[in-house]
Amino acid sequence: MEGVNEIRTPAEDDAAVEGAVLRLLLALHPAQIAFEELLREIAACPADFAQRDALERALRDLAAAGLLHRNGNLVLPSRAAVRFDELLGD
Image 1: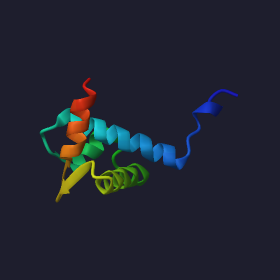
Image 2: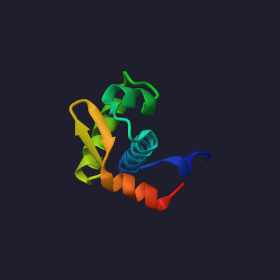
Image 3: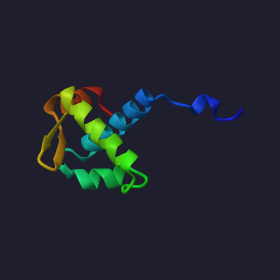
């Protein structure tokens, strides 16, 4: 049965979205990006409620972890996230 190993739990899906969001924010740093722009970059279908909700959850959880800040509609990585990215070096 092909694809059986590709099934992910909701928590794994959420972690994947969080990782994609944080990678994009770090790549664009120091620019701030608006939620709608981020949605267009991350979601395959930005009008889809489930994808919009997944992005909202990712932003909420990353902010709670101290990895990003929201300033109104704008989103940017925290200093801690930027510094960690610098330490890892690409």
